[in-house]
Length: 477
Image 1 (cartoon, rainbow, N blue to C red):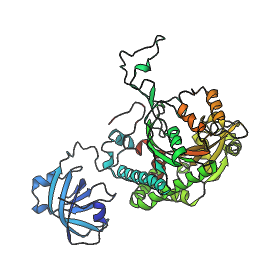
Image 2 (cartoon, rainbow, N blue to C red; image 1 turned 90 degrees about the vertical axis):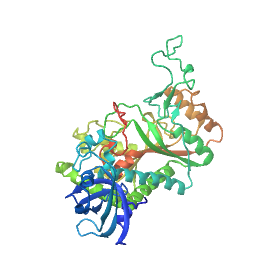
Image 3 (cartoon, helix red, strand yellow; image 1 turned 180 degrees about the horizontal axis):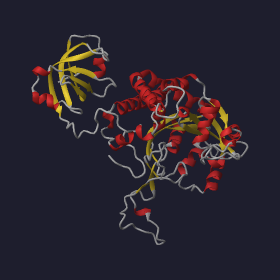
Image 4 (cartoon, rainbow, N blue to C red; image 1 turned 135 degrees about the vertical axis):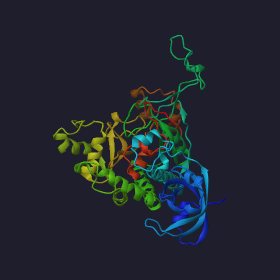
């Protein structure tokens, strides 16, 4: 039987028509009023049952979580809170739900409890709203780059290279753990493994994307990446999604322009297309803020924060200038920072990034020209010999949301940097080939998709913006 989505029913002005709706029961009151939701909208549709003419055995099966099909007449609602409702003429139970055992009861649940029930938490208003916004942002990512003439490239998930040089990678192996083949030196003999060498899950598609940018001009990746970093925090995941554009002939300034334009586009798309969900999430955040001490409460609402990003140019500040600001700041002088800024070359922490954005400049900030020693090998060395053409975009409440750079296009400089860091040239022979054959200035950046979703939805834990979070000691579902 065909049915109409609830999002179309609640926005329908043509009443007195016969309709069929399918969904899951959120609540059933007074043996008469069903709040029905099918996931297409934050709004439920009220279905009014003629309980006097409905068999008792059917009424008993209309429980929270049950899947039902209702048929009836769409009419103007007599009650408050909705424009239309369905006067039910026929109801069919498609799937029963034991009311006493169903975890998603119509009450307020803690986010920790909901994480333990990640397979069912999307049945709640909060998580349904977050995941619809996530879907819209995902579409906007592709829409932006496709409109700009970028080509979508699928880079490998299994790789033999460590793009970041951090070494915190998940190994991929088909070797038996109980009888691992060894070399004469006693080391694992990867030549007998599936790929004949040591391989890992990717931490970034950047290096491979660079090779495609040097042929197709402008490309982007959007796929899963993995970090075996034992960080059990509200900002880290072991598996997450990365957006990584790479553009031939772009210098750092053009890279910063692209990143700012891109972020504004996708945020604007969400504001325009997720109105009901963002309003719900804004109200939810406001309730959460009331539980905090006055000094810790946000001064602006969620939608004000999103519009703030859209309406303000991002402030561009050199790392050197930022260090001077931080060194002379009150939190630093009063030793309120956990990590005190004492000298040029310090690696900025989240507390420093948020101070610059939220307290000092009070707008999004792009920091550029970082010390070479705290950045990756592939970033272009400046003429001063000590800084690189790197840039990070810092957001309120989040800290770093984008990291990018102009890539080192000079073969001799790149090889010297790799030697200094002990990176094997033979492992990255293919990457160096792009500098041997038709090298050119090129740039790109990486944006952790979950941090973007975190910012747009106003959620405070990154585990709540991905369907099934993977974190230390947790690979459930």
